[in-house]
Amino acid sequence: QTRQIDAGDEAPDIDIRGATEAVEIADAVKGLLERVWEEQGRTKAALTSARDFASVSAHELRTPLTAMRTNLEVLATL
Image (cartoon, rainbow, N blue to C red):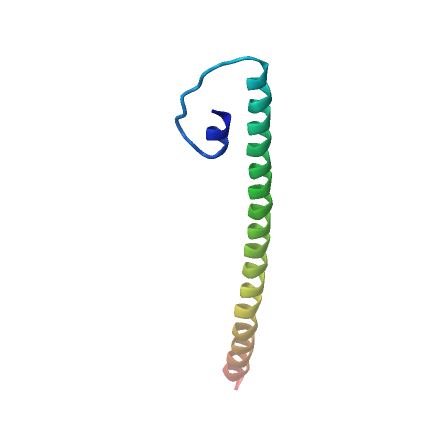
């Protein structure tokens, strides 16, 4: 049963047995936590990539706009 939960079964029949059930539950929880931690790592990496992309994109957009603005200011003084 715990293996069904660990495998992602959303509605397994739960039959409570003895002490071995506790070991299986602990093993399933361990597997669940490992997947959660792995996904947290992936999420952190994706957020870092998104922040880096936003930073680089903002810089790349500002650079030509600044040059155009400067050129327009110079032209306005003529």
